Length: 356
Image (cartoon, rainbow, N blue to C red; front, side, top):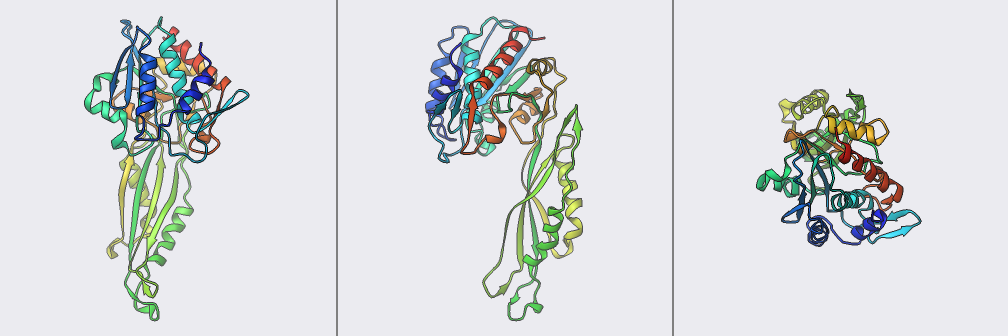
């Protein structure tokens, strides 16, 4: 087996900020074409490699090629058994594991589709999986899927949905010398913010995994001029909701929560700006249950959103599993250790060789 830390460092040293994945796509495509048992295809900067062994089941192993923009951590640096650098955690360590599996493991109990895709870290309309879904849905077919997102070597089941909503409250303009003649819309946000600040999170447990919902104010604006009472103010909210309800249910509960602080008769509104749907744990699928067993630890809920939801929407049970601490993703301290890489490789290799 290749030194997975060195392979990861090689990938870290290839710049691949979202929309700039051509070089790393070239690199992994060249590496995968070495294996004669793989059928390799490329769609834009997404590389797909498939085995055709005639097995009863097909497992999709996926990982994204892109990183967030540099934050002072670009360039690989190995210290002892740890690799530091932009994307080391999210998710070039996981990519290294997938590439190594693809070019070294050929006598498998399942057929495998490796999907190394572009533009995961930006708006979903650019996502390489979405492009494959539109142009080559045949390349995404599988009985189950595993995303090599950083999970600390644990199975992180499903994912939460995320909803961004804009609360707009109204008022009436007046001169600040005579504010009693108007209604200050910015002031009217105070009870709404109080409700948000006092939000009591739900913690539903689904298939033994505890999800943890959240509601946060992430933006606010309003005002006309320095001497004018503002007649309109906007509050942007981010709501993370568990997969025991859909986006409509989450929006309805948000409306119930904020309703007492709003005056719809005066024109106050709550509008959805964007939504990403959740995915259930799906760990009852034999392949994913086998991964849990092979990981040697109990699964936990994925509190963030990942492309597990994309596969779930296709009817493909999916989960998250990969090396690296997810809390380090997108930080200047991104790093991954050799033992994390080897443990993830070993668990996935065992699953592919002895899949139920």
